[in-house]
Amino acid sequence: MNNGFFDALELLSKENGVSVDVLIEKVKSALTKAIKKAYPYCERYNINIDPETRTFEMSLIKEVVEDMPIDESEINIDEAKTIDPYAVVGGFVEVKLDTAQFGRTAAQSAKQSIKGDLREISRENLLNQFQSKENECISVVVTQVEPNAGTVTVEHEKTELYLFRNEQIPGEILKEGQKIKVYVTGIVNKQKKPIVKISRTHKDLVKRLFEMEIPEIYDGTVEIKAISREAGSRTKVAVWSRNENVDAVGACIGPKRSRISAIVDELNGEKIDIINYSEDPAVFIAKALAPAEVTSVEITDEEMRTCTVIVPNSQLSLAIGNRGQNAKLAAKLTGYKIDIKPEVEIIDKPAEETIQETAEEI
Image (cartoon, rainbow, N blue to C red; front, side):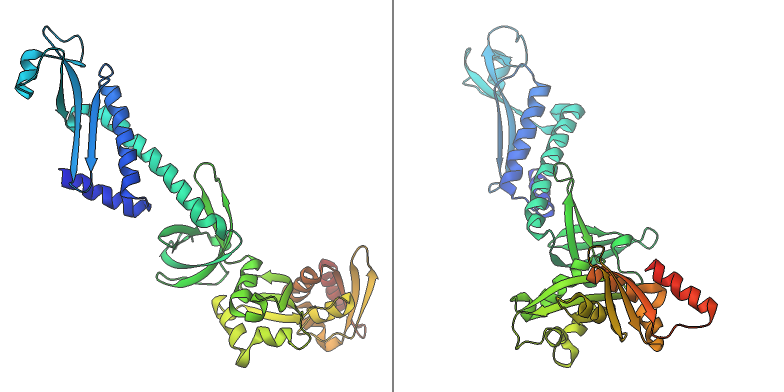
């Protein structure tokens, strides 16, 4: 029976990432509460748990009396002598216990106490493990995919985390055993049962991937000035070089597009536009509308951060993008409300109205 107890203890230790010694103290504390509840009048007891010798013993220490015991803290001399032949009145004998003697209530009390302690240990371990990883990118392995709910279970350093559907890249199909990177957006409910929130859609995941793949960004030579993202579709990244001899965009793309390709692959083929940042808003806005060509940019109100952009007629649909995506991402990247107009006004009224509606929406 003792072997089974210590085997269970070792398994519990591995599953919860807690040392056996810490667990033993928790078990002793729980058993103490159970003994006090089962034998409220007995103030002397002994709990011996030794993992090296695999010894697990519990006993009540009772006072030897000549007459009938008044409660469980006493034992009659005749009964005491069956346990210890040398027992004397006024002395003490050790009466061994086994778990079954506690009864269901006492055992349940011990179990609940241990569970509560383990929850607290798990809470502290989780916080210690992930508190320093908030707002960082971590590698995880997909362990389970729930097709109905869409929730994906992943594992990081033996800890299970949950990637919910709304935090997954649209269109991405994750498979068990697949290694992916996620962004730790934060830890909620820290005081009770902490939940580590992770995301594949957060724009800062792209930022961290750039830092991991591009040495010039990691060492600070190239700086990411702004990011706008529509996960699963397109991301725009504005970069700037502190060193005039280092091409910021070229550093991000890498030889034979090796660096940017690694990031695109990690993001399931998401398109990424890398743009040279400029302190001149007009220049920055023109670059942000890439891949479209821009004829001119007029800042109409600096305080309200509005502007009018003129593009060649052939570039109008490209500048606006599918469902206005390109223009919206450019607006988020620059912080300007962008009104896009064609170089030559189109006479066809329905088309003109469509352009105006799209421009107003943007």
